[in-house]
Length: 282
Image (tube, rainbow, N blue to C red):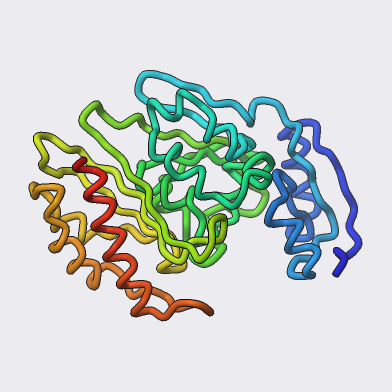
């Protein structure tokens, strides 16, 4: 199929983007990496009257490192995060997750902010940002605001973005020296969307787990933070995963899809919990 007809504007500034969004409302869509949008257009799942190309806006594709936090521009590509030595050193969870995103050709073009704003529940970056306690910087005509990643994802492809707003940056605190991370997922084929995935971060001191964050993807309409499983592991040895696996039943009821039943997804979530905790304790 071919995309429906639309107008196209390459924006020169964020101010112009805000003006265009105010003028055209829901009939306009932002074009960043376009790896999801263009497919939706070609399948006639989306039919905007205007595409606003933001790919050349300055200041939105940089990785800025400070002692306590890393700021990532929304137009930073998946590949840039995958290759960045600063990300590998300070936010290893992102470096661990990046190779699981689609294929190299997609990672070279797709953007960090685009993936987050799309809010696909099977995508890797939303779960990582929830596990890392990220803050999202959102711009609009009246100024900017921040919102925690845990409050940003509202439902299936639904976020806290208001009409006329744009996700511009993500601020992620750098975990302390005793913190470790692990990213694991299961997919039918390399590069496919995950059936189930898990982003895990924890403080590990002398083999004991504390401040554990387990953010699952592919099991609910948003990234699922497994609070009961996290609490069950507090003060336990990393290898004692049975308590966490059991507690998952209280955290979420997986959503079945065309390929996997809810029971299958729950079993896979238990398996990934064990693998992630083993990796944290290694």
